[in-house]
Image 1 (tube, rainbow, N blue to C red):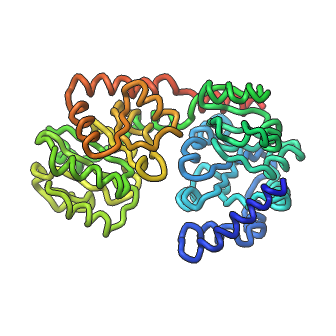
Image 2 (image 1 turned 180 degrees about the horizontal axis):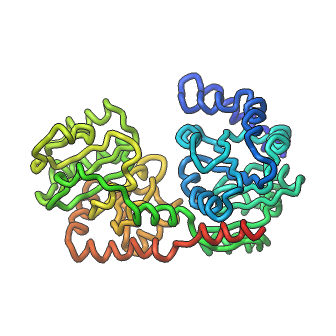
Image 3 (image 1 turned 90 degrees about the horizontal axis):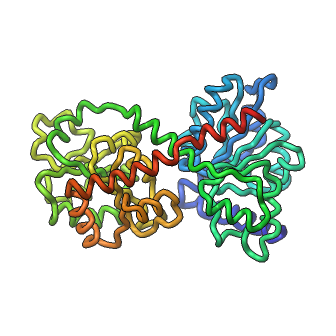
Length: 413
Protein backbone atom coordinates (compact mmCIF):
# COMPACT_ATOMS: atom_id res chain seq x y z
CA UNK A 1 0.00 0.00 0.00
CA UNK A 2 2.93 2.33 -0.54
CA UNK A 3 1.17 4.03 -3.43
CA UNK A 4 -1.92 4.55 -1.28
CA UNK A 5 0.12 6.13 1.51
CA UNK A 6 1.90 8.32 -1.02
CA UNK A 7 -1.47 9.40 -2.45
CA UNK A 8 -2.70 10.32 1.04
CA UNK A 9 0.46 12.38 1.58
CA UNK A 10 0.00 14.16 -1.75
CA UNK A 11 -3.63 14.89 -0.84
CA UNK A 12 -2.56 16.41 2.47
CA UNK A 13 0.06 18.58 0.73
CA UNK A 14 -2.52 19.71 -1.81
CA UNK A 15 -4.91 20.69 1.00
CA UNK A 16 -2.16 22.71 2.69
CA UNK A 17 -1.50 24.55 -0.55
CA UNK A 18 -5.21 25.10 -1.22
CA UNK A 19 -5.70 26.44 2.32
CA UNK A 20 -3.81 29.60 1.30
CA UNK A 21 -6.77 30.70 -0.82
CA UNK A 22 -9.65 28.35 0.05
CA UNK A 23 -11.72 28.77 3.22
CA UNK A 24 -12.95 25.17 2.97
CA UNK A 25 -9.40 23.79 2.78
CA UNK A 26 -8.38 26.04 5.66
CA UNK A 27 -11.21 24.67 7.80
CA UNK A 28 -10.19 21.11 6.83
CA UNK A 29 -6.69 21.73 8.21
CA UNK A 30 -7.82 23.66 11.27
CA UNK A 31 -10.27 20.93 12.24
CA UNK A 32 -7.48 18.33 12.28
CA UNK A 33 -4.85 20.42 14.02
CA UNK A 34 -3.95 18.85 17.39
CA UNK A 35 -6.81 16.44 16.82
CA UNK A 36 -5.67 13.89 19.43
CA UNK A 37 -5.79 16.44 22.24
CA UNK A 38 -9.18 17.70 21.12
CA UNK A 39 -10.64 14.20 20.77
CA UNK A 40 -9.31 13.18 24.18
CA UNK A 41 -11.09 16.13 25.76
CA UNK A 42 -14.35 15.34 23.97
CA UNK A 43 -14.18 11.64 24.82
CA UNK A 44 -14.41 12.38 28.56
CA UNK A 45 -18.12 13.12 28.05
CA UNK A 46 -18.80 9.53 26.92
CA UNK A 47 -20.42 7.26 29.51
CA UNK A 48 -18.55 3.98 29.17
CA UNK A 49 -21.42 2.06 30.80
CA UNK A 50 -23.35 2.35 27.53
CA UNK A 51 -22.50 1.39 23.97
CA UNK A 52 -20.83 3.89 21.64
CA UNK A 53 -21.61 3.69 17.92
CA UNK A 54 -19.29 5.53 15.57
CA UNK A 55 -20.95 6.80 12.38
CA UNK A 56 -18.77 8.36 9.70
CA UNK A 57 -20.00 10.53 6.81
CA UNK A 58 -18.01 12.28 4.11
CA UNK A 59 -20.17 15.39 4.08
CA UNK A 60 -23.69 16.73 4.46
CA UNK A 61 -25.30 14.53 1.79
CA UNK A 62 -24.00 11.35 3.41
CA UNK A 63 -25.10 12.67 6.80
CA UNK A 64 -28.67 12.88 5.50
CA UNK A 65 -28.37 9.19 4.61
CA UNK A 66 -27.08 8.30 8.05
CA UNK A 67 -29.41 10.59 9.98
CA UNK A 68 -32.54 8.39 9.85
CA UNK A 69 -30.48 5.49 11.19
CA UNK A 70 -29.12 7.59 14.06
CA UNK A 71 -32.55 8.84 15.01
CA UNK A 72 -34.12 5.39 14.89
CA UNK A 73 -31.30 3.99 17.04
CA UNK A 74 -31.82 6.77 19.58
CA UNK A 75 -35.53 6.08 19.61
CA UNK A 76 -35.19 2.32 20.04
CA UNK A 77 -32.15 2.41 22.34
CA UNK A 78 -32.04 5.81 24.10
CA UNK A 79 -28.94 4.92 26.12
CA UNK A 80 -26.75 4.25 23.08
CA UNK A 81 -24.26 7.02 22.36
CA UNK A 82 -23.32 8.36 18.94
CA UNK A 83 -19.90 9.50 17.79
CA UNK A 84 -20.39 11.32 14.48
CA UNK A 85 -17.38 12.06 12.29
CA UNK A 86 -17.03 14.00 9.05
CA UNK A 87 -14.35 14.17 6.39
CA UNK A 88 -15.45 17.49 4.89
CA UNK A 89 -15.96 20.90 6.54
CA UNK A 90 -19.22 21.29 4.61
CA UNK A 91 -20.65 18.50 6.75
CA UNK A 92 -18.91 19.22 10.03
CA UNK A 93 -19.48 22.97 10.16
CA UNK A 94 -23.22 22.62 9.55
CA UNK A 95 -23.82 19.62 11.83
CA UNK A 96 -21.22 20.08 14.58
CA UNK A 97 -24.05 20.80 17.04
CA UNK A 98 -26.32 17.98 15.90
CA UNK A 99 -28.40 17.18 18.96
CA UNK A 100 -28.66 13.41 18.43
CA UNK A 101 -24.87 12.96 18.50
CA UNK A 102 -22.92 12.80 21.75
CA UNK A 103 -19.76 13.99 19.99
CA UNK A 104 -19.06 15.39 16.52
CA UNK A 105 -15.50 15.38 15.16
CA UNK A 106 -13.35 15.47 12.06
CA UNK A 107 -11.98 12.13 10.87
CA UNK A 108 -8.18 12.22 11.09
CA UNK A 109 -6.18 11.58 7.94
CA UNK A 110 -6.05 7.90 6.98
CA UNK A 111 -2.68 6.71 8.27
CA UNK A 112 -1.88 3.62 10.39
CA UNK A 113 -0.95 5.68 13.46
CA UNK A 114 -3.97 7.99 13.19
CA UNK A 115 -6.38 5.09 12.78
CA UNK A 116 -5.01 3.27 15.85
CA UNK A 117 -4.96 6.47 17.95
CA UNK A 118 -8.55 7.30 16.99
CA UNK A 119 -9.81 3.91 18.19
CA UNK A 120 -7.67 4.02 21.33
CA UNK A 121 -9.27 7.33 22.26
CA UNK A 122 -12.89 6.56 21.46
CA UNK A 123 -13.13 2.77 21.87
CA UNK A 124 -16.35 2.41 19.84
CA UNK A 125 -18.43 -0.73 20.12
CA UNK A 126 -19.44 -0.55 16.45
CA UNK A 127 -18.58 1.53 13.36
CA UNK A 128 -20.83 2.53 10.46
CA UNK A 129 -19.49 4.13 7.28
CA UNK A 130 -21.93 5.80 4.89
CA UNK A 131 -21.98 5.31 1.11
CA UNK A 132 -18.53 5.92 -0.43
CA UNK A 133 -16.28 6.23 2.61
CA UNK A 134 -13.53 3.65 2.12
CA UNK A 135 -10.50 4.40 4.31
CA UNK A 136 -7.99 1.55 4.22
CA UNK A 137 -6.20 2.04 7.54
CA UNK A 138 -9.32 2.97 9.49
CA UNK A 139 -11.00 -0.18 8.19
CA UNK A 140 -7.92 -2.26 8.98
CA UNK A 141 -7.64 -0.92 12.54
CA UNK A 142 -11.30 -1.73 13.18
CA UNK A 143 -10.78 -5.24 11.83
CA UNK A 144 -7.67 -5.83 13.95
CA UNK A 145 -9.50 -4.68 17.09
CA UNK A 146 -12.49 -6.88 16.19
CA UNK A 147 -14.95 -3.97 16.16
CA UNK A 148 -18.05 -4.74 14.06
CA UNK A 149 -18.04 -2.50 11.00
CA UNK A 150 -20.83 -1.83 8.53
CA UNK A 151 -21.15 0.06 5.27
CA UNK A 152 -24.62 1.50 4.60
CA UNK A 153 -26.34 3.15 1.61
CA UNK A 154 -23.53 1.82 -0.55
CA UNK A 155 -23.36 2.00 -4.33
CA UNK A 156 -20.79 0.11 -6.36
CA UNK A 157 -19.86 0.98 -9.93
CA UNK A 158 -17.69 -0.88 -12.47
CA UNK A 159 -15.01 1.85 -12.49
CA UNK A 160 -14.23 1.55 -8.78
CA UNK A 161 -10.88 0.12 -7.66
CA UNK A 162 -12.52 -2.99 -6.18
CA UNK A 163 -13.28 -4.24 -9.68
CA UNK A 164 -9.90 -3.52 -11.31
CA UNK A 165 -7.25 -6.20 -11.89
CA UNK A 166 -4.94 -4.28 -9.54
CA UNK A 167 -7.60 -3.79 -6.87
CA UNK A 168 -6.72 -6.72 -4.57
CA UNK A 169 -5.86 -4.55 -1.50
CA UNK A 170 -9.14 -2.69 -1.86
CA UNK A 171 -11.15 -5.89 -2.26
CA UNK A 172 -9.53 -6.99 0.98
CA UNK A 173 -11.08 -3.98 2.68
CA UNK A 174 -14.53 -5.33 1.86
CA UNK A 175 -13.72 -8.62 3.58
CA UNK A 176 -13.07 -6.69 6.80
CA UNK A 177 -16.66 -5.45 6.88
CA UNK A 178 -19.26 -7.39 8.85
CA UNK A 179 -22.07 -6.37 6.53
CA UNK A 180 -22.76 -4.12 3.56
CA UNK A 181 -26.17 -2.56 2.95
CA UNK A 182 -26.40 -1.62 -0.72
CA UNK A 183 -28.93 0.62 -2.43
CA UNK A 184 -29.66 -1.57 -5.44
CA UNK A 185 -29.37 -5.04 -6.90
CA UNK A 186 -26.74 -3.95 -9.43
CA UNK A 187 -24.36 -3.12 -6.58
CA UNK A 188 -25.08 -6.47 -4.93
CA UNK A 189 -24.36 -8.29 -8.19
CA UNK A 190 -21.02 -6.54 -8.56
CA UNK A 191 -20.04 -7.58 -5.05
CA UNK A 192 -21.06 -11.17 -5.75
CA UNK A 193 -18.91 -11.15 -8.89
CA UNK A 194 -15.80 -10.57 -6.76
CA UNK A 195 -16.81 -13.10 -4.11
CA UNK A 196 -18.35 -10.73 -1.54
CA UNK A 197 -21.59 -12.18 -0.19
CA UNK A 198 -22.20 -10.31 3.08
CA UNK A 199 -24.64 -7.80 1.59
CA UNK A 200 -28.30 -6.85 1.84
CA UNK A 201 -30.23 -4.77 -0.70
CA UNK A 202 -32.28 -2.26 1.28
CA UNK A 203 -32.40 1.03 -0.66
CA UNK A 204 -31.42 4.52 0.41
CA UNK A 205 -32.08 5.68 4.01
CA UNK A 206 -32.49 9.25 2.71
CA UNK A 207 -35.86 8.16 1.31
CA UNK A 208 -37.14 7.70 4.86
CA UNK A 209 -35.83 11.13 5.80
CA UNK A 210 -37.45 13.00 2.90
CA UNK A 211 -40.70 11.07 3.33
CA UNK A 212 -40.81 12.18 6.97
CA UNK A 213 -40.17 15.79 5.90
CA UNK A 214 -43.02 15.61 3.38
CA UNK A 215 -45.34 14.12 6.00
CA UNK A 216 -44.62 16.96 8.43
CA UNK A 217 -43.66 19.89 6.18
CA UNK A 218 -43.22 23.26 7.80
CA UNK A 219 -45.95 25.86 7.28
CA UNK A 220 -45.13 29.25 5.79
CA UNK A 221 -48.21 31.49 6.18
CA UNK A 222 -46.26 34.44 4.74
CA UNK A 223 -46.12 32.63 1.37
CA UNK A 224 -49.89 32.15 1.09
CA UNK A 225 -50.50 35.38 -0.84
CA UNK A 226 -47.56 34.78 -3.18
CA UNK A 227 -48.55 31.25 -4.19
CA UNK A 228 -52.34 31.69 -4.16
CA UNK A 229 -53.96 30.88 -7.50
CA UNK A 230 -50.66 30.16 -9.27
CA UNK A 231 -48.73 27.13 -10.44
CA UNK A 232 -45.26 27.08 -8.94
CA UNK A 233 -41.92 25.84 -10.20
CA UNK A 234 -39.42 25.46 -7.34
CA UNK A 235 -35.79 25.72 -8.43
CA UNK A 236 -33.63 24.32 -5.64
CA UNK A 237 -29.88 24.50 -5.02
CA UNK A 238 -29.20 26.44 -8.21
CA UNK A 239 -25.73 27.49 -9.30
CA UNK A 240 -24.95 30.32 -11.76
CA UNK A 241 -24.84 27.72 -14.57
CA UNK A 242 -28.42 26.70 -13.72
CA UNK A 243 -29.59 30.30 -13.44
CA UNK A 244 -28.15 31.04 -16.90
CA UNK A 245 -30.45 28.30 -18.23
CA UNK A 246 -33.44 29.41 -16.15
CA UNK A 247 -33.29 33.10 -17.07
CA UNK A 248 -34.44 32.69 -20.73
CA UNK A 249 -37.34 30.52 -19.56
CA UNK A 250 -38.44 33.19 -17.10
CA UNK A 251 -37.86 36.14 -19.41
CA UNK A 252 -38.97 34.79 -22.79
CA UNK A 253 -41.23 31.77 -22.30
CA UNK A 254 -43.07 32.40 -19.05
CA UNK A 255 -46.75 31.61 -18.67
CA UNK A 256 -48.94 34.10 -16.84
CA UNK A 257 -50.48 31.53 -14.47
CA UNK A 258 -47.03 30.40 -13.22
CA UNK A 259 -44.67 31.74 -10.57
CA UNK A 260 -41.17 30.67 -9.54
CA UNK A 261 -39.46 30.11 -6.22
CA UNK A 262 -35.68 30.15 -6.63
CA UNK A 263 -33.45 28.84 -3.82
CA UNK A 264 -29.78 29.37 -4.80
CA UNK A 265 -27.12 27.00 -3.50
CA UNK A 266 -25.08 29.98 -2.31
CA UNK A 267 -27.07 32.83 -0.78
CA UNK A 268 -24.45 35.39 -1.66
CA UNK A 269 -26.04 38.85 -1.63
CA UNK A 270 -24.16 40.04 -4.71
CA UNK A 271 -25.07 36.97 -6.77
CA UNK A 272 -28.74 37.21 -5.77
CA UNK A 273 -28.80 40.89 -6.77
CA UNK A 274 -27.21 40.09 -10.13
CA UNK A 275 -29.80 37.39 -10.79
CA UNK A 276 -32.74 39.64 -9.90
CA UNK A 277 -31.32 42.47 -12.04
CA UNK A 278 -31.34 40.16 -15.08
CA UNK A 279 -35.03 39.28 -14.65
CA UNK A 280 -37.69 40.95 -16.74
CA UNK A 281 -40.33 39.65 -14.31
CA UNK A 282 -41.09 41.34 -11.00
CA UNK A 283 -39.12 39.60 -8.23
CA UNK A 284 -38.70 39.81 -4.48
CA UNK A 285 -36.40 38.30 -1.86
CA UNK A 286 -37.91 36.19 0.89
CA UNK A 287 -36.50 38.58 3.50
CA UNK A 288 -38.53 41.41 1.93
CA UNK A 289 -41.89 39.62 1.86
CA UNK A 290 -43.24 41.35 4.96
CA UNK A 291 -42.68 44.78 3.40
CA UNK A 292 -44.98 44.07 0.45
CA UNK A 293 -48.75 44.18 0.76
CA UNK A 294 -49.58 43.27 -2.83
CA UNK A 295 -47.79 40.21 -4.21
CA UNK A 296 -50.15 39.50 -7.09
CA UNK A 297 -47.81 40.89 -9.72
CA UNK A 298 -44.64 39.43 -8.18
CA UNK A 299 -43.67 36.41 -10.28
CA UNK A 300 -40.35 35.32 -8.77
CA UNK A 301 -39.46 34.75 -5.13
CA UNK A 302 -35.75 34.32 -4.32
CA UNK A 303 -34.95 32.54 -1.06
CA UNK A 304 -32.10 34.33 0.70
CA UNK A 305 -31.72 32.05 3.72
CA UNK A 306 -30.82 28.44 4.52
CA UNK A 307 -33.11 25.74 5.85
CA UNK A 308 -36.42 26.26 4.03
CA UNK A 309 -35.92 24.44 0.76
CA UNK A 310 -36.94 20.91 1.74
CA UNK A 311 -40.41 22.16 2.78
CA UNK A 312 -40.87 24.64 -0.06
CA UNK A 313 -41.52 21.83 -2.53
CA UNK A 314 -45.01 21.47 -1.02
CA UNK A 315 -46.03 24.52 -3.07
CA UNK A 316 -44.70 23.23 -6.37
CA UNK A 317 -46.02 21.63 -9.51
CA UNK A 318 -42.55 21.17 -11.01
CA UNK A 319 -39.06 21.18 -9.49
CA UNK A 320 -35.80 22.18 -11.11
CA UNK A 321 -32.77 20.82 -9.22
CA UNK A 322 -29.39 22.48 -9.63
CA UNK A 323 -25.84 21.19 -9.73
CA UNK A 324 -26.01 18.93 -12.77
CA UNK A 325 -24.36 21.52 -15.02
CA UNK A 326 -21.51 21.72 -12.52
CA UNK A 327 -20.02 19.10 -10.20
CA UNK A 328 -23.09 16.93 -9.76
CA UNK A 329 -26.81 16.89 -9.14
CA UNK A 330 -28.22 18.04 -5.81
CA UNK A 331 -31.08 16.42 -3.87
CA UNK A 332 -33.93 15.17 -6.09
CA UNK A 333 -35.49 13.05 -3.35
CA UNK A 334 -36.92 16.04 -1.49
CA UNK A 335 -39.13 17.25 -4.36
CA UNK A 336 -40.29 13.81 -5.48
CA UNK A 337 -41.38 13.08 -1.90
CA UNK A 338 -44.00 15.77 -2.57
CA UNK A 339 -44.83 14.21 -5.93
CA UNK A 340 -43.09 16.82 -8.07
CA UNK A 341 -41.63 15.80 -11.43
CA UNK A 342 -38.06 17.05 -11.60
CA UNK A 343 -35.86 18.70 -14.21
CA UNK A 344 -32.05 18.79 -14.02
CA UNK A 345 -28.91 19.09 -16.11
CA UNK A 346 -26.77 16.38 -17.76
CA UNK A 347 -24.50 15.27 -14.88
CA UNK A 348 -26.87 12.96 -13.06
CA UNK A 349 -25.73 9.40 -13.84
CA UNK A 350 -24.05 8.79 -10.47
CA UNK A 351 -27.39 9.14 -8.71
CA UNK A 352 -29.59 6.06 -8.47
CA UNK A 353 -32.86 7.95 -8.04
CA UNK A 354 -32.10 10.35 -10.91
CA UNK A 355 -31.46 7.50 -13.33
CA UNK A 356 -34.73 5.89 -12.27
CA UNK A 357 -36.60 9.16 -12.75
CA UNK A 358 -35.27 9.68 -16.27
CA UNK A 359 -35.97 6.07 -17.24
CA UNK A 360 -39.49 6.07 -15.78
CA UNK A 361 -40.62 9.51 -16.92
CA UNK A 362 -40.69 11.12 -13.48
CA UNK A 363 -37.65 13.23 -14.26
CA UNK A 364 -36.05 14.97 -17.24
CA UNK A 365 -32.43 15.76 -18.03
CA UNK A 366 -31.92 18.90 -20.12
CA UNK A 367 -28.88 20.17 -22.04
CA UNK A 368 -29.71 23.81 -22.73
CA UNK A 369 -32.37 26.51 -22.53
CA UNK A 370 -34.30 25.13 -25.52
CA UNK A 371 -34.67 21.69 -23.98
CA UNK A 372 -35.66 23.28 -20.67
CA UNK A 373 -38.43 25.22 -22.38
CA UNK A 374 -39.67 22.09 -24.17
CA UNK A 375 -39.80 20.07 -20.93
CA UNK A 376 -41.39 22.90 -18.97
CA UNK A 377 -44.07 23.32 -21.62
CA UNK A 378 -44.80 19.58 -21.49
CA UNK A 379 -44.97 19.42 -17.70
CA UNK A 380 -47.15 22.53 -17.48
CA UNK A 381 -49.93 20.51 -19.10
CA UNK A 382 -52.07 18.99 -16.31
CA UNK A 383 -52.30 15.47 -17.73
CA UNK A 384 -48.55 15.26 -18.45
CA UNK A 385 -47.75 16.68 -15.03
CA UNK A 386 -50.01 14.19 -13.27
CA UNK A 387 -48.45 11.21 -15.07
CA UNK A 388 -44.89 12.35 -14.32
CA UNK A 389 -45.81 13.09 -10.71
CA UNK A 390 -47.12 9.53 -10.25
CA UNK A 391 -43.84 8.12 -11.59
CA UNK A 392 -41.81 10.35 -9.27
CA UNK A 393 -43.60 9.50 -6.06
CA UNK A 394 -43.54 5.78 -6.90
CA UNK A 395 -39.80 5.82 -6.22
CA UNK A 396 -40.45 7.07 -2.68
CA UNK A 397 -43.22 4.57 -2.04
CA UNK A 398 -41.12 1.64 -3.28
CA UNK A 399 -37.97 2.55 -1.36
CA UNK A 400 -39.13 3.43 2.15
CA UNK A 401 -37.93 1.32 5.05
CA UNK A 402 -34.14 1.13 4.59
CA UNK A 403 -33.50 2.80 7.95
CA UNK A 404 -35.65 0.26 9.79
CA UNK A 405 -33.88 -2.67 8.13
CA UNK A 406 -30.45 -1.33 9.05
CA UNK A 407 -31.46 -0.35 12.59
CA UNK A 408 -33.00 -3.78 13.18
CA UNK A 409 -29.71 -5.40 12.18
CA UNK A 410 -27.78 -3.09 14.52
CA UNK A 411 -30.08 -3.65 17.47
CA UNK A 412 -29.77 -7.41 17.09
CA UNK A 413 -25.95 -7.34 17.08
